[in-house]
Structures are given as C-alpha cells and as structure tokens.
Amino acid sequence: MRIALGIDHAGGALRDTVAQAIADAGHEVVDRGERDDYPDIALDVGRAIQAGEVDRGILVCGSGAGVSVAANKLAGIRASVSHDHYTAAQCVTHDDCNVLCLGARVVGPAIAAELTAAFCSAQFSGEERHVRRLAKILTMERDGMEKSS
Image (cartoon, rainbow, N blue to C red; front, side, top):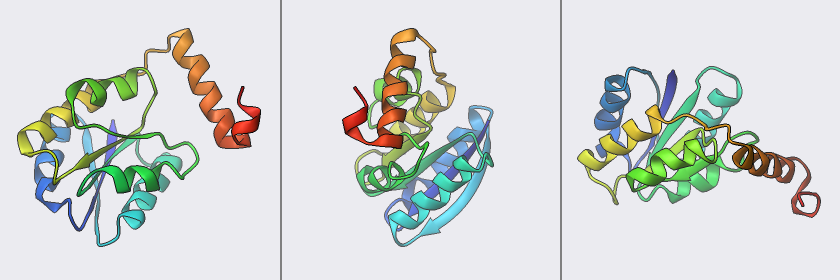
C-alpha cells in the first residue's frame, strides 16, 4: 500500500517515527511534506487519495482534530482522530477510514508508531452492517442529511 504522510507545523516531532512505522509495516511512504496551516496539508493528502496516487493517508498536527476536520470536508475522505490502538484499527475495519489523524501534542513516539501500525494493517471488514452504514454516509456526503435515512 502507498500511504501519504502529511505534517503541519505542530506535527513535525512525529514525522520520522510515523514514516518509519509505515515502512516497518511493509508499506511505501509518500511524504507530502510539512505545511504551516493544517488545512493545506489535509487538502494535499486528501487530493492524493482522491486521485488514486495513494491508498491511504496519515496526517499529524498538534491535536489531530484540525487535520481531521479539514480532511473530512473532501469527498471520499473518511478521516479519524485515533489516540488509542482500538480506534486506529476499528476506524478502518468498521468505517473504512482512509486517513489516520494523530496529535503530536497528545501521543508520544511509541504510541504513534503503534497506532500507525494498527491503521496500516487493518482492512475493511465488508460486513453487511458496515457496508450499510457506509452507504448511508456516502449518501449524506452526496445529498446532505435530509436524504440519508
């Protein structure tokens, strides 16, 4: 898998750790660089996923929240802040997330490496209930809330 890595001004402390964890998991790191403003790097990583240049992305800012909010504005991007092992894997297996968002001011290098590995190794389950829920999310993305039920 090709995984884009994007960092904002506050996420630089985890850059090497996350890149190494992606490589250690057997995937290719596509470093999209570092930007001062988190919306800019979220847009860059999101567009790379949309264009099929990469399979997934990992974004790092101070809290993980800013890059998550920004990335989720893009069609087809499902980004999750994950600061625990369960969520880093479950966001993929249940919700088919394609972007992991980490907070460099929240987790240290050892946890960031663990979360990266969990995200990289997880696969969408394809279970009917998760497919059904994902279809509703895609309808919401396309048509808005009023047509999603």
